[in-house]
Length: 256
Image (tube, rainbow, N blue to C red; front, side):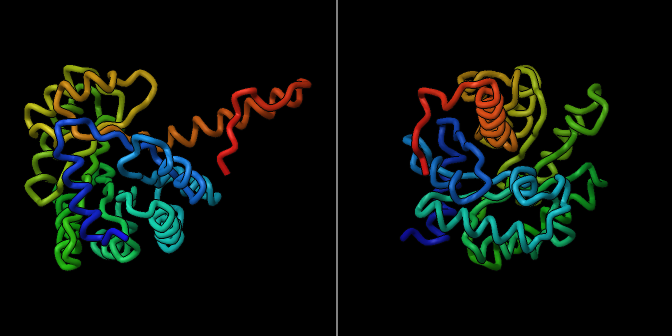
């Protein structure tokens, strides 16, 4: 079995490689098993929104930290030798302690949201997370996230994101995560200002093509709650078809 330290090193290598790292987010043991066994999978990622929703909580740190960490632990065990990076929101009021607990259950990377808190406060959270990983002796992939494109004026979002990205990377974050519907020019500017293989994006309807993201120097694309929405859409369509007198789709696979 690959050690936590070895998985962390592997995840760092995947982010630094010239090939775009693609991670399809999973939210429980069976989704982790299905994606882990899919050819081409190199790492797994968890979505905080998806895990919270699967346990009956709204998004936004409403799920107790213990429950979130317990689900991450289950996904890590299911993933086997694959590295797992976890979405841990803003750290549940204790960024350093939350990262330490994630490492304890075998996670080797994490998203940490800034929630557009004052920059100094957000930087301190990154520093606490980095220090927790240092103490654990793990080359942890901290993916510092900004909500600039979600919560601020579109006219100033790019400038704000660049400022925050520089600060988080200077504070020791491995990568910078910028969720939102960004165009090619915005992505190119972020990579130019922050460095190649440092910027991570989310795949949403209307996102730039994956091939173009790689050409621009993006490190990783993940899918957050959208992979869960794909699964739920299929479930809703099944229910609609059954109620209309139909049945299972002919291409259904037995995956559990």
